[in-house]
Amino acid sequence: MVKIHVPISAHDDASYDILIGRGLQAELPRLVREACPAARYAVITDSHVNGLFGKQVVARLHDGTLPAELFEFPAGEWNKTRETWAMLSDRMLAAHFGRDCGVIALGGGVVGDMAGFVAATYLRGVPYVQVPTSLLAMIDSAIGGKTGVDVPAGKNLLGAFHQPRRVIADLDALASLPAVQLAAGLAEAVKHGVIADADYFGFLEREHQAVMGKDADTLERVVSRSVEIKAAVVAADEREAGRRATLNFGHTVGHAIEATAKFAVLHGEAVAIGMAYEARLAEALEVAEPGTADRIRALLERYGLPLDLPESATPDDLVAAMQLDKKARAGAVRFALPRAIGAMHGGAKTGWTVAAPERLVKEILGGPAAE
Image (cartoon, rainbow, N blue to C red; front, side):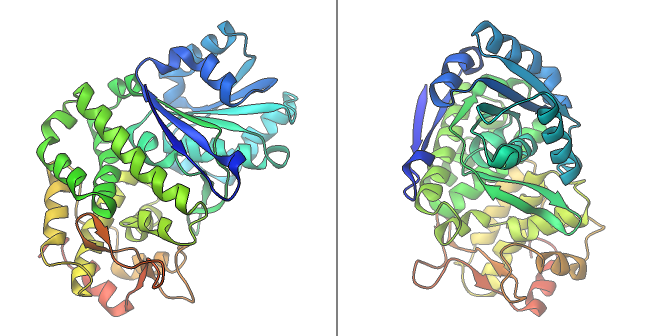
């Protein structure tokens, strides 16, 4: 088992460990009890993950003498809403869960965001543990304490920072992951290589067949290195006041795609498209080294990820959605852009995002992802 510590410097009690290994679901009673002792546990999951792991996880918790009750909501990003949050919270209240309870988020990114938001707000906040079951959740969304729901105006516009007590990533869960979901998670791995580690990016280029074939050792390295990168960024900037903004590469355009497509596009696919276009924008602004965009696009294509905008997405609609993005300032759309593979533009003194002229953004979005 690999253990990666996330030290949250602002308040030590928010620091936690990320555990990566095989067979960890079988050890959940011990791993949960150690990090998140509670009188009762609300296991929050969605209808898809429940069919795969829900009953087994609750049975294991019961076998380990941990009282647990399952709370399910319908699968799909379009169900990550205030209404679902209210339904789950009301059900926990009706079941008389008190302030001595804990929450276990069992599932992918949608479940992690939703369960984390319930935990952040239930009786003004209760502790929780992340048990991610998708690659995207393991290497990205389960780490960092961002929780929230989507609203008609955009993605994750209501939420809270609420750090988990522990993240337990059982690599065996990836065996059931469809290829399209595996690729969606790899978009975030590619992002990690772009923003922080050129050698890791090169590894993803060389080992794409082993990755897509779910080779055990290769996947363990992908999860471990991506977790190390994100954990280091989060530890240095818990609330996105500085360097953490680099994790948003590809997400300004990506979130706009998700919002305008009504979440018909997977998050990882939207981020892949976003990276393809934002890398082009970086070169057009003379922020990135020439050739950076082509190399990013080639790797995304190798993993079977989409690169061009959905037919329904227009530059005008996307820019309008971006202006509602959390990263927008004074009406200006800002982007986290690479300087080269493995290094981001900006710094502590100058800031980590760049404002781009609306005209140029629309021009880039109006063309193909590669030219």
